[in-house]
Length: 362
Image (cartoon, rainbow, N blue to C red; front, side):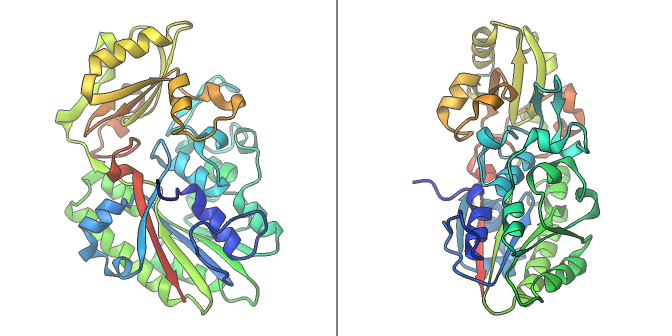
C-alpha cells in the first residue's frame, strides 16, 4: 500500500484545526496551531543519507510520503494547495500546453496572464481554512506573493514576506500569538536551487542542508503548546551527469511529427500532429529503449499516476509522455538552461518521489 501523498498534507492540516470537510489522514491530531514547513527539493532518501547535516530534522518521528507525478514544483504545490492530484487540478507538469490560450504555460515564470482563476478555478484549502475563521498565513519570499502559481493554487489568507530564517521565525511567532486557531504555511526554496546547480550531496548542498536544519530548529522552538508541525517537501532530486543526456533536437527520430515539447528533462510532454500519437509513441519507445518509459495520453490517464483526470483538462496532457529512467535526461532547446543543470527531478525514482513526512508535536 502506497504511503499518503503530498495532496493529503494540506487536507490533514486543515482537519487538525477543525475545518469541516477534511480528514486528518496523517494523524496530526486536534490542535490549536498547525504548521506546514515545506523544503523545496528535499527528498526522503537524501535526508536519510545526509541526515548528519540536519539533526533537528532526523530527531523527529517520521516516514516517507509520496510526491505526485510529475515530481515537480508546480504539480506538487498545486496538490498541496488544493488537496487534489494533477489530473484534477490541472497542473500536469513543469510546463504544459494550455488549450485555452493555445500556448505553453510555465507556472514558475507566470504572473497574471492568463488569469490564475481561469487556470485553476476551484477553492483552495487555504481559502476554505480562512473562511472557517482560522487564521491562515503564508510565510514566504516577496517574489512569490503575486505569482500566478500562488494565485492559482495557494491563494487564501494572509501573506507575510520573509526572505531569511529570522523573518520566517518572526512570521511564525506572529501566526501563533493569537488566542484562536491558526494554520501557517512556510516555504523554503534554497535547497532546490542549490541542488539543481551543484548537485545533491555537494558541499554547497550540504551547507544548504545546514541552513534547513537551522530553520526547522528555530521554528520548532516557537511552537506553543497544542501545536503540530509537519516538515515535508514537494519532490526529491537526483544528479544527472552529462553522459546520461539525450538531446531531443539532435535526433531526427525524436522530432518527426512533433509540434511542441514541454514538461522538463525527466518528464516530457510531447504534443504531436493529428493522428500521429501512436506512431510517435512507438518511435520514441523504440529509440529510447530502457532510457525512458513512453506512454500515450490515454495510457498515462489509465495508469492513474495523475489521479482522476478531469475531462475538461485532458488536452493539457501531452499526446505522448516520456518518463526518464535511471539518470537519463531528455534535454531540449525549449528549456536549455534547465536542461544544463546537474540536479533534476520529475520522474518516478524513489529519490524523486519519496518526500519527508516529519511530525513535531508540542
